[in-house]
Amino acid sequence: MSGQTRSSKKWRIEEIVLYMTLFVFPLDALLSIGGAHVGNDGITPTQIFTLLLGVVCAFKIWAHRDTRPFQFLYRNIVPLLIISYLVINIISVLAAPTPRNGLMPLIQRTSTFVFYVLIVYVARDRRILKLCILWFVTSAFLASFAGSYEIVTRKAVVHGVHISETNVRKELQAGPTGKFRIQGLSRDPDQHGSQLVVQMGCLLYLTMCAPWWKKKLIAGALLLMVMGNIIACSARAVWLGMAVVLGVFFPLAPLRHKIMIGFVSGCILTIVFFFLITFFPQLEVLPRMFGHKDTGHYSTNFRYEMAKISWNMAKESPLLGVGTGNFEDNYLIQIRDIPYLPRHVAYVPHHVYLGVLAENGFPGLIVYSSIHLAVILQLLACFIRARDREAKMMAIGLLSAFAGFMLCANFYHLWGSKYAWTVMAFAAALSLVLNKEEQEFKEQQNSIQLDPEQTPAFPVS
Image (cartoon, rainbow, N blue to C red; front, top):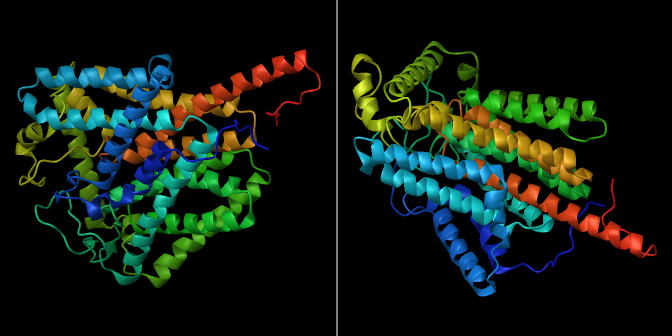
């Protein structure tokens, strides 16, 4: 039996709103109001539910006058680092030649941090945290089902926009070989795959910890769909991200017959791969895997040039960068001597860390990288401190999910990924839950010493 704190099983209104917020993540591109470009989805269901969640939580805090749940903001290193990074963003914007370019990114990044805080505020015990992860993973069914539909029909579920295009693309993205890549509900194959990589880590935890074989079967079926979608999106960095998730989860997870489970998982993944390339040869999996001259060379050269552009911006402004939101303007200046990069749009850097370096300088990069390192250390600490198998599996599932995101972040522009920030919030919530359970356990031990007839409700396994 896991060390779960005693709490009411009745769902509170803020719980319900948070569960719905996590569930509608993939629907943002499908149900958005306005916005037709990648990174500009207009008003989305996630934003609407997040606003509602904020209102509900604010009313509850006002009604109960209880601010204790927010003490983690100054007792935990991660939120302190995030706040420090936001301050650096503000300073860099004020020092930029065009401060107005940074207004919207600042609002978005601040709202992302608020969403992080709201998740930690609501998920204050293990039951709520487990349900949050369950709803977060359940949303992967929507995305992977859409991707599976695209594999079979070769029709896009959501009209996509490639970042180098100015008009809406109504078909699936095709490579130089004429074969296509699925994009699910994300409008872009790379975004679709990187989001599923993050959810895959959490799904592995739920699959291995499901109490009954029927639940394991359902979670396993969803895991197969997710892995199939990750392969079919034909994104090499996403494939590496999936490998990182598996490579972190199975060696560290407290599993019996670990080697056998890992071997069977590898066999299943291989079967899924050969099934896709055999029965759906129109997918651009093999050309991407073996580096077709037109597919691989341009992508590699493009990322190399983008890295050089980011580095040049950082060298020109090493302390504050070019300013949050000002990468695009400086990109158009930097590409004058690079003939094959498009000029009709302003790119975002396809590398989170280099993008931070370009916009916020070396101090911004150090603080931002420290946030990710602190999350990793936080989850490792949770794994070591956890008294039961379920909590250890949860920590490793979140750790593998975040490690997969960090790999993808070196190839895609994922700073504002709500999937990654949700995992970061789950990590903070798990740490607080374990602190609370340890305190309750110590109190029970003290009471047992006073009354030997009592038995502890939090067994150590």
